Image (cartoon, rainbow, N blue to C red; front, side, top):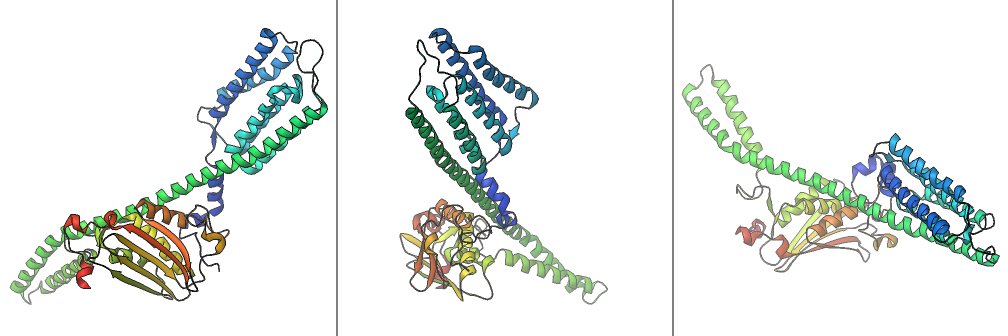
Length: 449
């Protein structure tokens, strides 16, 4: 078992990690309309260049032969626009075939206009660049190989470059230089553009997962608030029912309906006990039930779902002054819960949470007695898709926890304690979290201490 797993308890990722990874790596399907628009721009540029070179500048060239590939692109675009709706989205394979046609069409035009000696030979890199930003790496490499094969053939197999007077012919070594520059440029584009685009897609996917986790936590928080409100509102009618039932019991005594009245009293008492459990935290205040908690209570609530019987769990609270009162923020609860669950996964015997506060700062630290963070992961913790458990999840847990904690105004740091396992420390400015002064409510935890 590795020391620390940034891939925390995201069950949806574990259900189908392969599908999630594919989605994160390749992004959403590309719209056909986008590639059609790009091809219309290319057709316009090609037709314009043909007109300027042949008509305006008067260079002799095979105009009819050049017009055929351009007309083929026009015809293909028209067919696609008629055959498919505007909302049609292409799969990666369809988009790859679409761009492969563009490479071949450009190669045909370059063959008719001087091959690599044509100043516009660099345009054959455009489809490869588009592929690197929207397709997976395998298809992009395949498209790059096709483009490389085309420029290799064009370096020695092509018609003369349109020119006045004597045919223009570059020295072969210069043509080799052009081929080399195009090949190196293609390799750089594939590497750089794909990595940048893939990182952007992965980050977007991770942010979406963070929003989903926060939305779920907000739903749980709303459910708790609803339960607390129901407990408060139902308390009065239940008390009335109990009073009336006791009066009936006194009047009827051991009469024929005495047993029924006894059952009614017992059930009303049970209902009051249930409502008391729902609304036991914090103080009996209508507007703050379950929405405002002392710091230690909030930390306990965040950690409770992730505790394991086989491991000891301790909370040590040492603060200067009254204990801060916090709103029941889903970001803090979900973020702390993730970190506690992760510590539980790798602890040998014990997980400890240290809570400290003073007039300026609130600190919560989660530590375990496990082997600590692996050195190769420590510096990149908090980045999306960083995990030491290959094949299980996508490594979004720490990213989600860090993002949520930072969203609440905190700063999170990861480090290894010398010979004592791993620790995660979170610091908040007290002014961001503590609402006790604003509400003029004493901190219950401080009084108990």
